[in-house]
Image 1 (cartoon, rainbow, N blue to C red):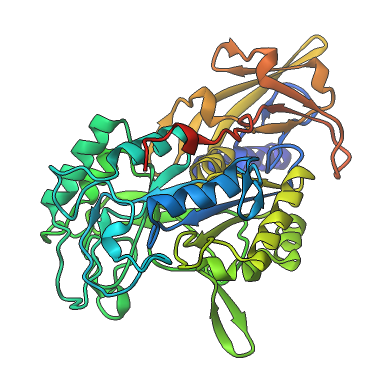
Image 2: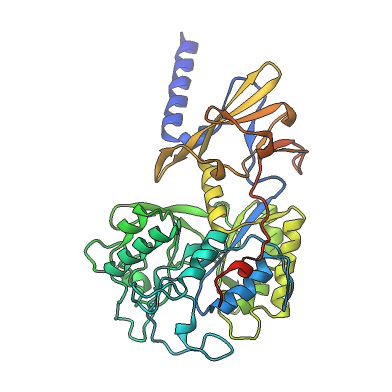
Length: 441
């Protein structure tokens, strides 16, 4: 009698855990004692890194210069291109009146690459270029709606009207950013995600329904899912890049960590500009995220310098070091949208495993996104998912009821854990020079 009571109590406790902590049982269902386990990163990588480059100070010419070096294998003034998957941000508007030069020709802020002239949504400026680089994958994030930094920080020019006009244009242009990155000083009242009644972020009004700068309802309706909320991290790596953000209008989005500062014996060291890349991409930092199995989202302003070329030799050397870690299969370098989406799916994917005769079936069911709801996943959202299995060649992966084609599957030998695995192939490398097909400068 006592034994039956204990068994019933154990069963009820397990049910309660499953209901309260569904992630505990993510992908655990199986009809066999042979375990199938989801690997943290796509095989063979042991860490994942992306750059988020804010578009501040970047002219169209500078954008081409540094992306040819970062993304292609072409010959550039900084040497042979690295062939990495690194994307960028963009602005729709330009409204700053701060006095500073943006390049070595001493041009003012209106030389920066923006979709519109000033804050006039009827006058396209670099619209065709931005559309081209969005489609190419060299742009995947929005650095708020534009540069609204003002000498008088009480001025707020980014109203709901401009936000609505920006989204209407983006919809027509086929630009659908999931990533929002706050920008600038306190005049950028469109910022949101870290509002406090007192202190620096008390200016943020983007998620305040009573404010003329309110727009987060429009942004979320148009697909914004990941937000950098103005807080930079001192840690180069994090176990997960994402965390829930609760906004003042009641909506929820995913925040993401972004490394931008070092702690030193002399205090805080700002590493957020192209001159400091060598302080970010140190062997110690890169080895640490491999050792810990971490994500790293690195803040930068690739076009923020005013030199003849964006990256000096020490910083080119650091970027070449990162490329070595990538090509050696240690750190997967990916554009931010791919890293964040992969992070989300890897954490919240739901799958079951079934063993039939001598084969194993992994059936991917859905994404149990705790903020945006339980939903089906698209084929491109599951790229890179890697499962430890006993026999990869005897394993099939299904998305819903559809078996994935062998061309989408990768069979992997044992990694450093001694376990073999099967992967859904990551995105194919793309080193094409999209500046060659861009609208003329």
